[in-house]
Image 1 (cartoon, rainbow over the protein chains, first blue to last red):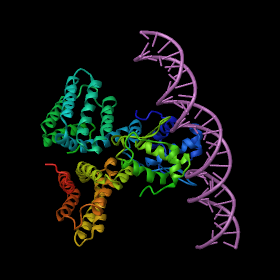
Image 2 (image 1 turned 90 degrees about the vertical axis):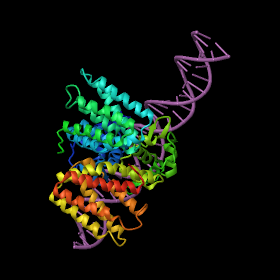
Image 3 (image 1 turned 120 degrees about the vertical axis):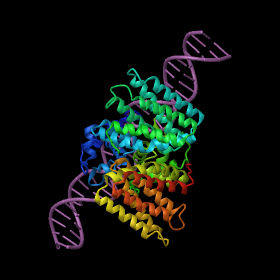
Image 4 (image 1 turned 60 degrees about the vertical axis):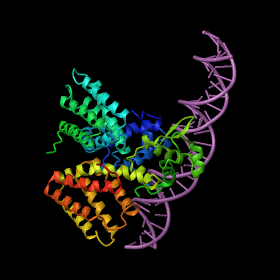
Length: 233
Length: 233
DNA sequence: AACCCATTAGATACGACTAATTCAAGAGGT
DNA sequence: ACCTCTTGAATTAGTCGTATCTAATGGGTT
């Protein structure tokens, strides 16, 4: 991913991060730097750097005379892409997907509305291209090719919104969509209705119809919620 | 704040973080660990820990033979509370407030709808209490007391949504509201209409009327957008 | 109960060594 | 004369081990 075991401390994080985010150490658990350094066979300097990173993610807290204590889940930086990846790779993947899909359902419609106002001609073209790619791969078990265009579509929408906060959710959406295709539902071809909605969103954005783009995207995200049995009646 | 100059590396971060997020080093700028260590009069070990943290925020990238290069703004972890604080304290504070308010306008209505479904009796009571506190302090230049209740109100909504991602935006909302009160508009008493809306949201949540809670909250956030001249018609 | 001190584990510093990457000079081919 | 590939030196972060400092904790003393 974006963070391949970059250096020794990176390797340590790749093991320790998932362990912590998976909840293997209950909140309040104490880890000692010396022990960790021994366990991973690295020097304390390296171990301290890793601890600093975990600390900046609010996963742990390092105090003198006490050690490195694991913080409760409620304090974690759950928006940190690294934390998200670790949790998606762990055992509370379902819950994580629910949370993220809910976030999508809140943000993406608004982003689509903004995109309809701010999208450049180039972005509109990209959007249409993505939508066509989705249509072309919507039948015949071409799930991978479909996924690529689906991810690209949502990325363009988020970027075109002109809001940096929305734009940075592109990676998150990509993870969610990939997760849905690879692990959860989706054994068959995607829902034709969803494909149509994407095409219509592309049209609405190009036409500058913000209200319609927002409403159509809301339908898409409602569909995503229903797939995960997140009912909202 | 949550991270008061904890240790030497914390002190370094408190200076270097704001400098980078303020854009004082253009993307691609190269910093050398040795020089930085000299500048802050700390050991290389401490400097390396600070760099690791900045790296985990995707503010910089550290490569051998090159140095510590500043990454473009588009790659920063803009959801990291620390980064948000640094940027709010810096010169692109207005833009940051716009981005965050837009995020609020997307998330809070959805969160309010969920809160109407999931809120406990205790949370409903808290909500009503907050709303009453806002009413009580809405006249007579009691802006500070008003702010406290306003922040608490939105925190309860986000918590009661039952979604951890939404809940973690409580701090962000707090920063935005505090910023609005202390620096920007708001020289006079808050808008009476906004106060009324908060009371009505509390009622709707208690009544379990999700659609109404969502719509009322949307009106609140639209008001916040208008205050910042973010027009959306 | 209040105070003091020994213990402990992280915090900082320093120096030596390692390894990766860049850049440039030079060999060889076109 | 130009281009390409190789090679090697310089540079800078990465790693490690040790020594010292500091602050929390817990027990013991008054």
